[in-house]
Image 1 (cartoon, rainbow, N blue to C red):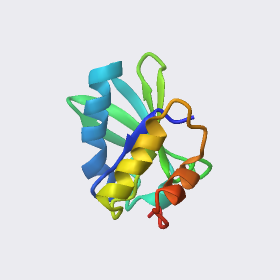
Image 2 (image 1 turned 120 degrees about the horizontal axis):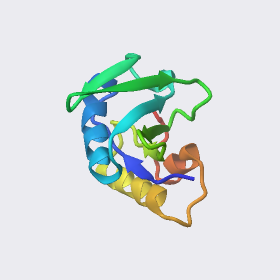
Image 3 (image 1 turned 45 degrees about the vertical axis):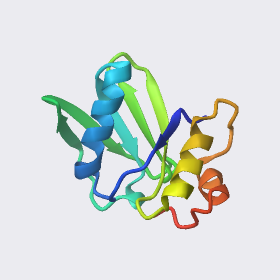
Image 4 (image 1 turned 180 degrees about the horizontal axis):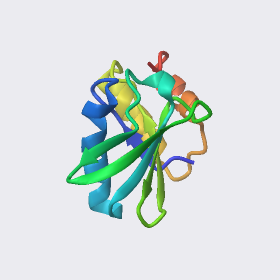
Amino acid sequence: MLDGGWWPRSNDPAAELPALISGVTAHVGGIARVSLNPTAWESTPDQLQVDGRRVLVGWFRVLDAGMVSLTSASGHRIDLLVVPPGATAMSAAAAMATAADRENRARPAAILATSDITNPR
């Protein structure tokens, strides 16, 4: 279900998403779109400039608040657990390891709860 995890340092998408997008781009090519749940973030920009490219940002209440979905220009989709900024290092590491486990089928909220992260935002 998930391809891994991400632990942003704040709930500001304009501050946090560029580094994530740049890092993922290095592995799968250019990211064209990012999808998030608006309840988990301070603002809702509809696009960002990242490394000289425009990246569209979509906001969907039906998307799990504990995940981010990135779509590459070629259509490859990557779903990541979003560990809340206030999580402890130990809890964040446990949650991201679970999210990256290919055998894992748990939903983001269950992963966060199992990792003792009770407040996703």
